[in-house]
Length: 134
Image (cartoon, rainbow, N blue to C red):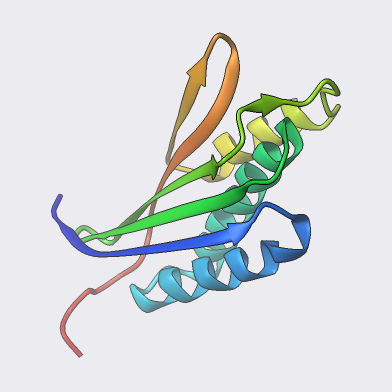
């Protein structure tokens, strides 16, 4: 698998910016020919991972999403929080559900974890069709 393109976005770690992440994700997946279902799955995985991290940490931080488009029509997306290391005292009840959703709609999920705290996600989703030159 070779990398064809890389795209990075950095957003304020606030729920109101999740639409930017979803639209970016959909655009990238559409560009390489993902089916509508695969696009929706990837958008859901990125949204859930982002919301999980936003709910997990407090403080002034940003969300970084790095997309890697591969020649095999797969997307590898790394979702992480930048500028915050303070774990919130409250543990949102929906954390387990978020983890379940991320894992069920992705081909592979790697959690960046330290002492039981998840600091980031690497999400891999295959789909897409022809990456031929346009």
